[in-house]
Every structure is written in C-alpha cells, then in structure tokens.
Image (tube, rainbow, N blue to C red; front, side, top):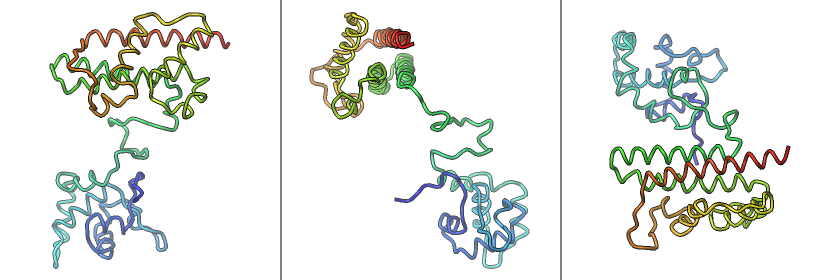
Length: 267
C-alpha cells in the first residue's frame, strides 16, 4: 500500500507522476521558473530537489500553458498575478493533500486542529464527553431542522459515550474482562460496573441510570444497530430527543461523580 505524503514535500518523481509529465520537464521548469518556486526546488549540486504544495500549483499552471515553443515570459506574467493559486491549478494540490498532515506554518490562523502527540486524549472519560456532546449537537440539529438524518448518528454517539464512560470507570479491571476488555457488549460492562460500585461504595445505580443501559442492551447491545443501521428487533419504536438528551446529561454527570469518588478514595 502506498505511503501517504504527510509532510507535503515532493520529489521530482512525485511531481512528474502528479502532473503526468516527464521528469526532465520538471527539472527544466524548475530552472526556468526558479523565482516562483521554493529555494529547495533548485538546490546545490548533489542535493535532491524538493517541492511544496505551492510549487505544485505553480508547475500545474506552467503545464497548462507549456507548448512546443513556449512563451516563457507570458507564463511568468501569469505567475506574477498569482493566477497559479486559483482554480483549477489549486485543485491538484488539494487532491494530493492527505486529510491528516504534519504541522506547517500554513496552519497558522487556519481551521486546523492537533491530534495525537501532545494532544493525545489521556482519559476515556474525556473522549466519552466528546461523543456525548456530539450526540447533543446532532439532537439539537435534528430538532431544529426536523431532519431524521441526524437521529441514528446521534443515538450511536450516545451509545458509544456510554460504553466509554463504563470502560473509564472500569479501567482498573478492564483487562480482566473477556478478550482483554476489547468488548462492546454493554451488558457485560454494566455487570462489572455494578459490582465495582457495590464493592467500593456499597451502593447500586439508581433505576433511571440502569434503564438507560437496559434500553441500549435491548436495542444496541454491541454497538452495531445505529452504527450500521442493522435491523432493530422490534416493530416501530419512538424516541423523544429532548428526553434522551436530558437522560444522557444526567448519565454523564453521574459518571463524573463516580469518577471523582474513586479518585478521592485513592488519594
């Protein structure tokens, strides 16, 4: 499988393949239009040429107007007006850009977000909150737009949030569960959760809390019903979006309270 170019640094061969031209032509263009390319496109002898996404746009523009007897000055005139950074020349750079990228200066003041590394999510409860909030947003949009397209994704996000909330609380014993905790069965997770509450605090979850779990156990025990749109075991059922949003808010608050108590007890 081809390795994606996350650095957005292109060799002569890369550019030649993207533009479907001969490698020698890329080198000729780099010579003729050096003022419009990054300095590494024309490096000292013995160093490999390196092109950027902007260079790709520039060379795409050059290709458009290159002929057997090219008018190089006219092409430079177009480049001076930054026409290379307009459609359709930017299209090939967009198509060549992976959806995940390494950091670059062009991300400054753009709608870019960091994932992994220093931005790695440390606790499942944080990720669970994110899925819960995503469910809230989808419910809000579904209600405002009266759009059924939001419903299954909203319920899936809520269901996945519940799974992550339970796994966060069970973090100390998750590896003792079947398949080393790599399970999605809410019934199994909830059984372990109840045992933990009983052993640690001598309490049982309130009925409303358990009812949320049991409803998902009935309709989506392993996380496939609303993810893949598989058949629901019963006839038509109705869901009150305001109600599920409120119940999920209560559920999330309860999990955070349990998490705080566990942390207090381990100080």
